Image 1 (cartoon, rainbow, N blue to C red):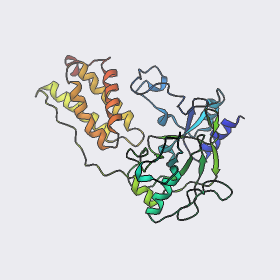
Image 2 (image 1 turned 180 degrees about the vertical axis):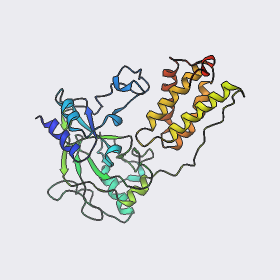
Image 3 (image 1 turned 120 degrees about the horizontal axis):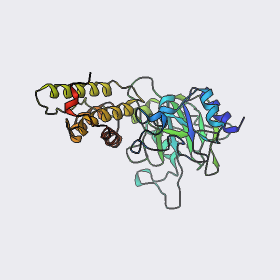
Image 4 (image 1 turned 90 degrees about the vertical axis):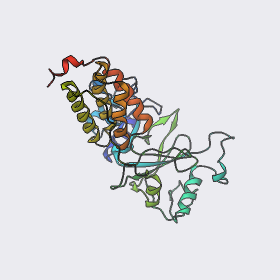
Amino acid sequence: MSDLLAAALAHAARGWHIFPLRPDDKRPAFPDHTADDCVGRDPRCRDGHVGWEQRATTDPDRIRRAWSRRPYGVGVACGPSGLVVVDLDVPKHLGDTPPPEWAGVCDGWGVFAALAARHGTPLDPFDGFGPDAGPRTGIDATYTVGTGSGGTHLYYRHPTSGPALRNTTGDRGGLGWKVDTRAHGGYVVAAGSTVAGRPYAVALDYEPAPLPGWLAGLLTPALRPARRAAAVTLPADRHGRYVAAAIRRQVAHLAAATEGQRNHALFASAVALGQLAAGGALTDDDVTAVLEPVALSVGLRPGEVARTIASGLRVGARQPRYLADLGRVA
């Protein structure tokens, strides 16, 4: 058994959902296209784009089949695995210095330590490795990986209540300089993999600790008011009633989608309504006005929503549904 296969099986045995990365690379091996470029040629995308998060698995048979073919790296899909991973990075070059808010810190560990201290849980930012590795003061030690670039991944259990946490990036709406987080919609390179020849290795083999409350508070998104689909003006005839019913079905389908399936549900709804738009019953702007508010209210990000709707409209346009045919569709 190869080392990578052994690592993949070991991570899956913890209940972590994994998927193949390109050999010695951070990028997913499958699918080889984005949702915007999906044309359904991939067998798993025949009913809509299926990304790496939906393909991630704990099935040892699937894992053995995949890793017996090529020396894939191992990616851990954080959302399905119930994980929040804090990525503490290091400067990339001499000019990579902290902004004034973080003056005096050296790297992501320093920022993380400062945040912990502000919230009453001080830790030693230099106590990341060694026989007693892991922060020992004010915060539970947790599963820790040293990254290929010299940074650190701290694995925590996602809270069992409250909203789903998503990814954050550094100072751009995140926790601070050189501190990223990965949760729903994100993944990390797992221990046992390499990127550009540099290994990711376990530094502290504990079970992931619960996400500290102060950290969960910082990462919890502000509650969004519920949004309704926009009203679309339709003729008051049989065709108009049919199109209105089709819109209600797709809105209900999207609103009921579970975490991890919402982008796929949005794509499917955009395809279905895109077929009506291509046949002249709606416009592309109508479809966007109907689906976008609901997609945002269930937690999808604005850029993700715009790309997925546009992709669904393109696919739907290939199979128009015309007004003259609507009455013959059950």
